[in-house]
Length: 233
Image 1 (tube, rainbow, N blue to C red):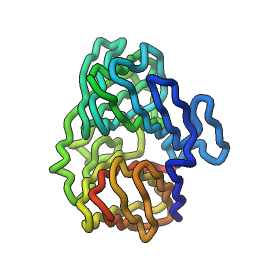
Image 2: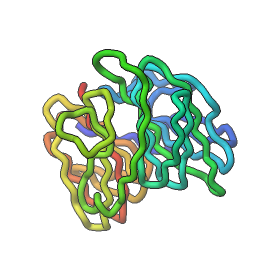
Image 3: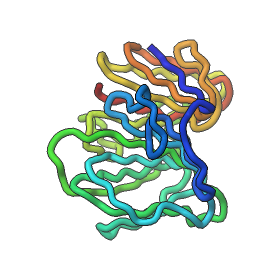
């Protein structure tokens, strides 16, 4: 089953400094049919104006993954962490028992990010934060795990949940496959370009909610950059 959610059907709001699109219910946008997908709770497509950003605010009990599409995001938190994550790279904040953080676009142009929240499992632990580069050349023509709570994904940023976040870069005409385990839920969005997933068309910013598909076969109709979340039900 693949349910395509077109970009122009997403909820959201334009605050001037922030133009946000919500794949799932978030803030003032509420759709009882779009409350999450498996353990995936939030997927926001955010454009942040230059010199602006999210001021310090609290979170707890959530795995928050930021995938930077264009520009860069600068992070500060109550643990004393500071860092800058550039386009194509990823940061992870495990909110755990509680953390305050700020995310700013200190760049001269707009920054575009995917903000992905996944519900944690297991015991509540102290908060943490990390970031690392993931060169796009290393995921050319294939999916690479960017963040994961699944055993064996040792090269990925750690998250505290039965899920993984993956990225792939496909040239027009290239095909990549991903095996989806039984009972798993997947959600995929092209950060750029257009693809077909198991024969269904998916454009930039569209979301594909997937389950009961043993293999995902993705063919690029034009150069494409993909982000995929595979989570427990």
